[in-house]
Image 1 (tube, rainbow, N blue to C red):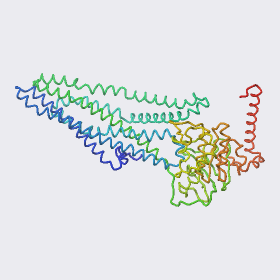
Image 2 (image 1 turned 180 degrees about the vertical axis):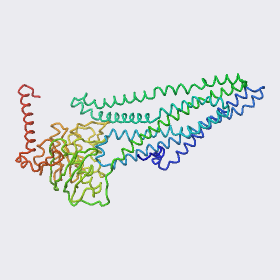
Image 3 (image 1 turned 90 degrees about the horizontal axis):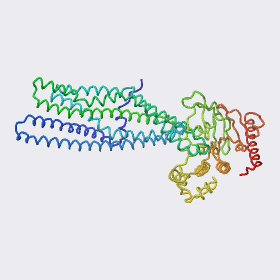
Image 4 (image 1 turned 45 degrees about the vertical axis):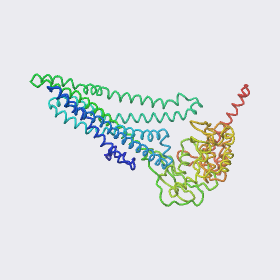
Length: 601
C-alpha cells in the first residue's frame, strides 16, 4: 500500500511562507460568521412566537430588542465573513505565487531530458493552471470549511430545541440529502474526476503544440492529418464530460428535489399536532421557523458538497504538480573537477530510455580529440541524437562513462559543463523579446563587438538589415516572425557569442530551405572552426571533410572512419552514399525535364 497522503491544506501550507497564520484566521472568522448567521433565525422565531401568543400591543413593542439583535447579528456575519475572505484570498495568493516560484525553480534545475518528456504546453498547464486551481480552492472554498462543520451542529441543536418532533421530521430530507451527496463523491466519482482532468490536461497540451506548429502544418499542407491528434483529444474530452455528467444526472436531480421538500414532511405533522390538542399559534410559529431554517441545511450541504469536490480538484492539481517535479534529478557531487582539455570520450556507454526495455545505445566507445570533428550518420532511430544528448548530460548513462577532458562528466559542475558546450539542434527555440536579447541569452556580459561579429559569421546580417529596428526588433506573438532558416541563423549567432569550446550539432539544417541551408552551412563552418565538434547529419555531403565518421545502427557503431575509408569498405555507409547520390541525380534530372518542358521559374 502507498503512503497515505496528507490533507490538502497541509500540503499547501509550505507554499505560504511567513503568512501561514492567515489560514487559521480565515477558518476562525468563517466559524464565527456561521454562528452569527444562524442567530437571526432563532430571534425571528422568538419574535413570531411572541407576536402570535401576545394579547396586547405593548407586549409586541417589547420585542424591538430582538429585531435589533437580529439585524446586528446579520450585519456582523457579513463583516466577519468579509474578513475571512480577505484572509483566505491573501493566503491563496501566497500559495499561488509560491507554487509557481517553487515549480519554476525546480524546473530550471531539471536535467535537460526532462524537457523531452514534458512539452511546454503540458508544463504550463500543470504549473500555472494547478496554481490557479489551488488559489480558487483556498480563496473561495476554504472559508466554507469551518462553516460547514459548525453550522450543522448549531442548526441540529436548534431544531431539536425548538420542537424535537418537528426537528426530527425536518431531518428526513437532510439525511436523504447527505446520503445522496455521499454517493456523488464516492470512489467511482473520484475515478471519473481524475480521468476528466487527465483528458483536460491532454487537450490543453495538444492545443498549445498544434497552434505552435501551424506554420509547419500550412507549409506542408498536412492540415487534416496534423489536426487528428488535437481532434482526438477534443473527442476524448467530450466523451469524458458526457460520462461525468451522466454519472451525476440522477443523484443530483434527486438531491435538488429532496432538499426543497421540508414543507412536504412538516405540513402533515403540523396538522396532526393541532388535531392532538397543541396550540395552533405555537405550532404555526414553529412551522414558520422550520420553513425558514430548512433552506440553511440545503445551503450548508451544497457548500459542503462543493467543498469536497474542490478538495479533490485541488488534490489532483497538487498531485500533478508533485508528479511533474518528482522527475529523477541529476546527482551532482562536490568534486567539481575541471576538464584538462576538451577531448570528448565515450567508454562502453549503454543507455535505455525510461519505461523502455530496448537499449537506445549498447556499448558505445569512441574518442573525439580537441579541435577535431566527428559526424554521426545512419538510419533514423539508431541512436545518433541520444549520443549527442548524453554528451551534454541530458540523462545519465546506465553503464560505462562519458569523459570530458579526462574527467567523468558526473564530476563536473553543471555550470562548468554548460559553459563548455554549445547546442544547435534542429528544433530552434527563440524567446519573446528582441533579437539582441535572444542572441545574448545566457551571456551576462553584453559585448557589442562580439554581437556584431556573431551576426556576420552566422550569416544573419541580411536579416538584421531588413528589419526596421534591427537588433531591437521584437519577435514572437507581439512582434516579427522569422522563418525556420532565419531562426536557425539567430540561434547560431547565440552559440557564437557563447563561444564554447565544444559544439553539438543535431540536424541544424533539417528545416531550412535551399538558400538558408547554404547560409547555415557557412555559419556552421565558422562556428565549428577550431572547436571540438560532434555533428549529426542526414545530408552526407556535409560530412565529407570531418576527421571521422561513425555509422550508427541499432544502438551500435557498425562502421568508423573518414569518408574515403568508409567508401572503400563498401559497407552501410557506401550504400547510404550511393542512395544519396541517386537522390541528387534524380533532382537534377527532374529540373532538366521541367526546363525542357518550358517550366523555367
